[in-house]
Length: 283
Image (tube, rainbow, N blue to C red; front, side, top):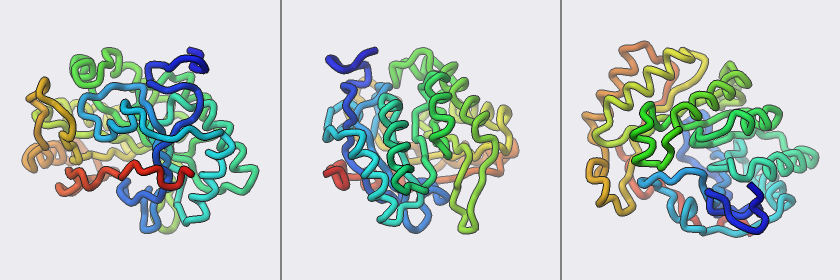
């Protein structure tokens, strides 16, 4: 839809709005490395996850509006700071502006891989637009069950859209390529956040990913779920996951043959791992 004069479902107009642009150390090791990922947090979101850890910017509207030219400049500033890549977080509703900004930045010397950090609630047409822009796809695969997707994210058609989107991502980047330091340069890493009490659903998601893509992708099994919003209406997920729950999911992944994967330590389930949305790097 035309968002020039009104907001879309994402809550944003068509002017780019971001809340932070800084080196980020808390991604997968092959993305953050020791120098950090040049992470740009976009305001707004095309999903409505009740447990969102970034609610301040996803639905709260926090951030600063900037031009496409300023976004391109931010990419170059992150490169100058030593970033290993440009990591676009929740970028979908600004796809066209991002394409223009990347082109501008590359014309001025941007050499870093572009990471597209998304919920996977995408149209295939959008992913195709980014074929010559994105080097590393970092999608979530949140659910294998549309009932859960509707209850927790207000997305009753999530599963079919996410499957199709990830298929296109893998078609574009069918192999993970790393440099000599183990930093990813191209490929697909699919994340699954384990929710409390949802062990079987997590297993179903991981089994699907492995059966579908085998070792062509990396699977990141995440334990960082933190109930930092009001979840009184969702008591079944109003707690952190237990170590036993997480271990059961990891053990299952190993049993079915997953070798290309990433795990998280238990201490990642903490609000201290949520970055401050303080407009660092925006001005």
